[in-house]
Length: 233
Length: 357
Image 1 (cartoon, rainbow over the protein chains, first blue to last red):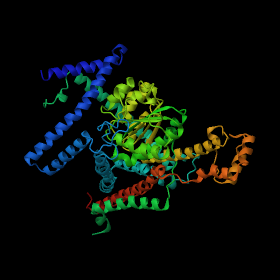
Image 2 (tube, rainbow over the protein chains, first blue to last red):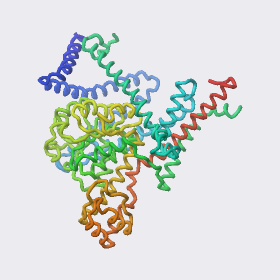
Image 3 (cartoon, one colour):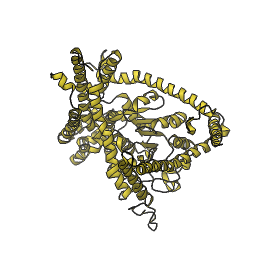
Image 4 (spheres, rainbow over the protein chains, first blue to last red):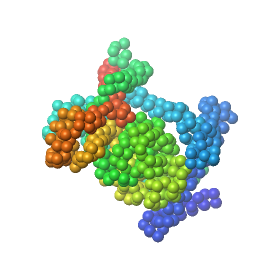
């Protein structure tokens, strides 16, 4: 029963959404399906919170390696949740001055906004910015012209890295932009690589993914692939 | 130990230090000198600009800010420039987000651009903040058929029925263009697959360098403009800044009773009274009539000064951000190339000596 009911729901809704695409009379049912998806997506936030609590509370109680990080995660989670839910520091909404809870939870001046502005924003920006350092280090240690494919990759990297900056036009400025060799200017070469080689590769990947999604979806609709139900089999 | 062996065993903290300097030094130099690396707008940036420029004033543009603080450095400047072009053109702007912190991105960009440079725009009449909605592509799919179901109120909690610019918006077909600034999933791809392609709504996309290769196959049939990371943003910024100057010059002339006809007839804008006289003479039959040119030449010197003042006025720093950030990008890319060359030299030399890895 635990597996049959979800299988029936999945197959019914999945088939309905596919058929509704071709039968206009079923479009309202299809819209209802999409609405249900949005509701489930909102509920997923609650489930996500529950899952986070379960994992980190277990880590804390077991005193696993790195349990102090779990403590920080839980502390941050609860502080953010409480200040957001209770709108701590929220200024009154000018449209409803007699309703103290009418102000936005993330308005400037709220504690939630303070957390975003002075903790979340700099931390996430720092994490992303650190990529530049690791990429530089990786390029130095791992980007080797060991074989023909690697040489092709290196050559393309040089063209793109130069073409994406002012160095590209500066280095090949001597090639007349209207002449027969204009395509050899680095910015043009970079655009050509992206437009032709990259687009061809990306298109092939996209078509491959689409075919993969179609076949996986069919397997799920037919009940052949049940991995999404969990349980290991 | 030889030079190459020493380089091969270089502590990576030296590389981190070099990268830090490669980014920090240009930032300081650009800040102190005001030098901005030259940019050359490429076709994708031009078509992005053109798509929004071709829409008549008052068109409804949906702007989806699907990025977060992590990618703000890459996407923030283009988001600001999108708002600037729409605001200057007089488009109605509808902001929304498919990622949770996109709501904060909307707040900061609208506050920076509209709050500071277009304070006359009225909330609810010229622009509206619809905020974030959970559901990824399902949000887009629902908006295709029923806008109010997904957004019963705006980000401030006001029912949409009380917001003047929302009247007549039943679904996405009410919009004349979609602008998606995207850091990943959900974002531009979902807009293209579920909205702009089936409904044939002109769409322009600004995305991170990592996402851009995936979006190339959709250009130019399914998306009409594509800005790739800070490079695309810098090219687009250059185009919009130039256009804004021309538009301001044209509007000032119009306020003085002279209407220039034709969008491309402005030529090089005059920055002194003498140049203005010459400009008026040169544009007879190219946007100005003989009588209009005589009228411009006959303006009092104060009026002429008022007309040419914005032409040479420094651009607000907010609208030079992308071009400024190309400086650190240039030095960082050059450092990367030097490191790759050095790494390969080391590899081949040490391998020849029998110690290659």
